[in-house]
Length: 235
Image (cartoon, rainbow, N blue to C red):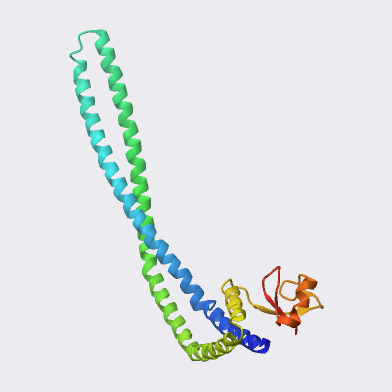
């Protein structure tokens, strides 16, 4: 039984190695980076579009406020000539100063918004220039990755068929064993099966195995490490 399990793990390891090599190939790594760039670029372009709309709408409102301020200023200025006394003249002068201050603040805000619109425009154009080239490179990487993947398919298919046959044979004898193995593999633990070393140590994590556990090895053929959860067997 344990020989079959070790063979099962060996085949599983071969498949794992092929998948790892594929996923860490230059084409895969570069493709993932380009894919992430394109995704973020699309998100940023949409954000810049929305922000530009907000800013342009804001500029329009600010210009309307500025136009109204000019109108108010002209009306107040005209009122200076018709002021009936010093108090009214002082009141109009104060209002003129307030309007002038408000106009200066609006001008400053308009200038700030226009600068941001200009900066967004430059960033937008720069990103737009980069996206087509990135998209072309991404397609090339994906194409090369798929070619490599296709080259590996016959070997992987053969290994999976062998794995399936072993799984059936082991499951018929000890379904709990294969179930435990697959559960640990699902947690990215590999190797799952590790030999007992030094008489009482798990070779997976180097922690000592209890006397009670080691005594069950001959009886069950394997025990579960209390520390790393791997399946320990006697070599």
